[in-house]
Length: 184
Image (tube, rainbow, N blue to C red; front, side, top):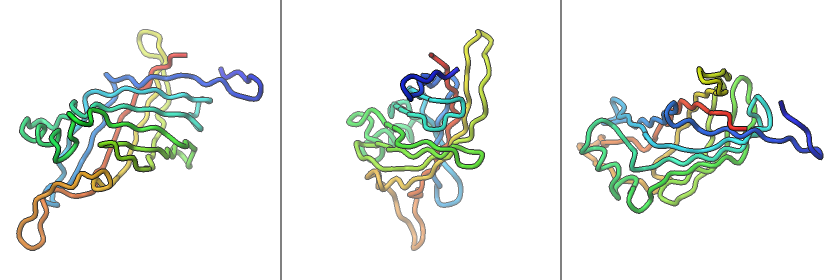
């Protein structure tokens, strides 16, 4: 239930459930197939004024060192200064600047910060609903997608071969399965 107080809605606080949230990235390798990985450590909150999550405030922190692709050598390279430089820049951050309903989806505008470089991005989110979990907590689910250019964050490492080939695409697709836990 949302209560009005001096013409302002009291916002409900939700926490990102790190156990049931997965943030995956994909980049083309040899421009033929995707190399995928995900981040195993994330945290954040959502402040929502209503049950539809329109006009929410979102804050997300991703720990760069938690990157995992299943190949240790590739993971170490992605954590290195060639890519995320996880020692110097341990977190990737996102905060929303606007959240609105766009048809059946939510359109989330916000600032993504990688390597302390901030860029505005747009994320499309599909709200999957909310349900009580077996312990009586209220959970909400979302599927989220965006595409960005890694060069915008000064992640420029690549290898070139032959006349037309590059090793890794500049475009990165991000997909997140997010589960929220209602706190108040």
